[in-house]
Image 1 (cartoon, rainbow, N blue to C red):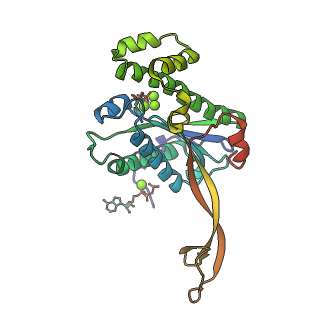
Image 2: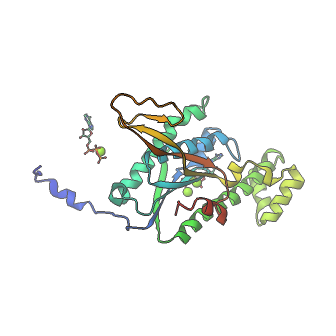
Image 3: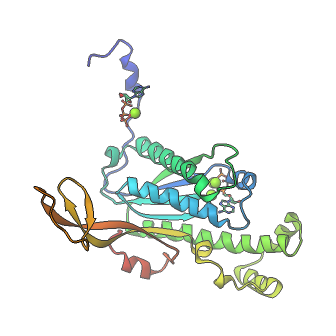
Length: 271
Ligand code: ATP
Ligand code: ATP
Ligand code: MG
Ligand code: MG
Ligand code: MG
Ligand code: MG
């Protein structure tokens, strides 16, 4: 199509390709969720419904974008790892980032009433997003270790902070002051001696965050018209259609350690 005399302005758009053959991590994070969680009466320190809603949005993103091989979520954030060779949108950074952040946000809003049936949305939530490229497996593993270590540090702090406020009837300022300078062991000890809480028995979702992987579970029969039936279903071939079996990939969510080697040995196809 011939352009108008105005079309030259298109040349001001700068291409923004992401370096080829590098690991791409995209992280979304709720914008101003300190306020959002208060306006929508999230349970402190961990609102289970809010975490499940984040998981639902992340699962939807992974259904839609098949090149995502791993996701990790905690609090108001989710990180997505793409397979190194992905050619999604020709690796255009702003196209990938804007589309995925927008899709995540839409899924969050669409699923809101399922997880918060009696809490109307007071205002539209938004998420920020960034893409970081990592050259080797080491940085990718360290990235995910960093996020999961963060989950632990924050959860230990927040669990004790809210115990001091809710059960200990301290003001938030006094609770922060009490916690200032304490090391991990002291926090465990205070939780146990003052509130009878054994940190290690708290929900794994709160302590470890959410990990989403792809799992090949079952061979499915794919009729050539695209309809899928589980292999176990007796298969009278519909007239004129050919059958072929195909591995069915599903998404699996867990709350496991991803810092040690065990997870990565078990999921050696991720990197
Ligand atoms: P920014 O826009 O810079 O990200 P923010 O207010 O979202 O600011 P974060 O550092 O992202 O700050 O922290 C998110 C905050 O949202 C947490 O500190 C916590 O108060 C709240 N929050 C998020 N998820 C939950 C949850 N499941 N349960 C309780 N509170 C939550
Ligand atoms: P991309 O993801 O690359 O943007 P696209 O399919 O969105 O692909 P665009 O060039 O953005 O392509 O064009 C948007 C298309 O959406 C239009 O070509 C038109 O078919 C359709 N569309 C958008 N708004 C309207 C509207 N108000 N009425 C009818 N059709 C519309
Ligand atoms: Mg932030
Ligand atoms: Mg945030
Ligand atoms: Mg955050
Ligand atoms: Mg368009």
